[in-house]
Length: 116
Image (cartoon, rainbow, N blue to C red; front, side, top):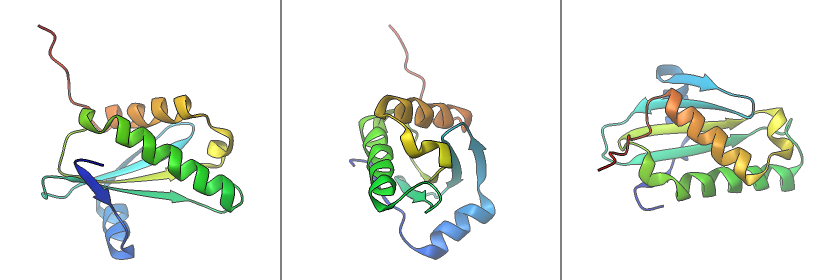
């Protein structure tokens, strides 16, 4: 990821949960908090309720790849946590991408593109 890194520390996750704002859709919940670092940090959480380790890892790879491909659309300087809901157990890549962009739009993180 060019403009981002992973959010790994438990204290960082807890800080975003406590102080950030959240929006949800059918497949995911996204918490966002401004970090003033000039780059995004993204954390992905998939509970055991969603499925076994293969399913959980597959979902986290789908989210990470969806974000990586659309990273230039997101504004910089935020900590983001994406939490998979149980319904995300059988999600496709295109549904993941659409859901992630939807949540980014709700948080007003998606940059508007000017057409000349």
